[in-house]
Length: 110
Image (cartoon, rainbow, N blue to C red; front, side, top):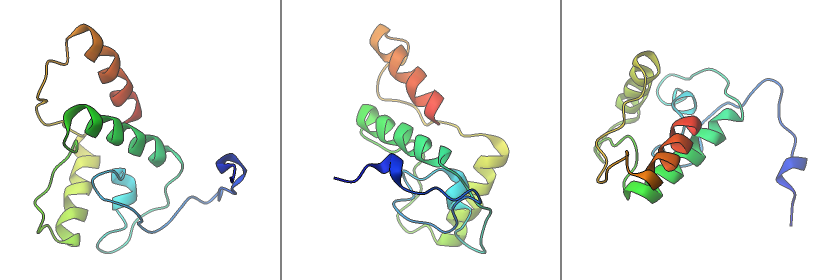
């Protein structure tokens, strides 16, 4: 087994896109379309929060139509970065006692 903590991390950040857009941080998605800026390990924390959100809600936190082009996705991502992310309505009550801790975790990650 490889220790992930032993893998080198570039001080210049990462470039390019890998993985599913539903779980990717907006900073990583700026590489769609005409390119973007370098991003760091904090994007992995966002992806962890997105994964937890999917586990709780059975849906991604930000949904776009299946036929969304890369250019449209890049534009939506830039808008999200400028205006802040808004979660769609959840299928359960976030204020319930157990859900508050889950919400705090997801919000801290994302």
